[in-house]
Image (cartoon, rainbow, N blue to C red):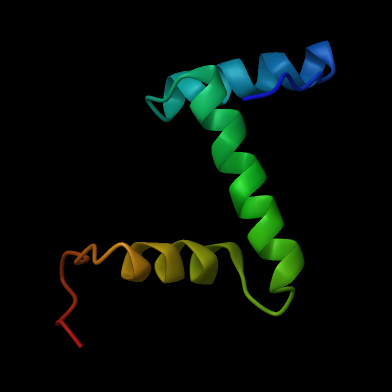
Length: 68
């Protein structure tokens, strides 16, 4: 595990977002990094498509959707 230096303003945004999303600040930052990496690797996909892809990979069944 390493230490990542981020701007104070970005840290505050992560703190605010983590409260809304019920995550720790570190978990929120990790989430943003993971989604950002996936977006860079898959520029044609939208945020929602990336999230759906990750949910499917984790075998999360979405409410209201039939299993494929």
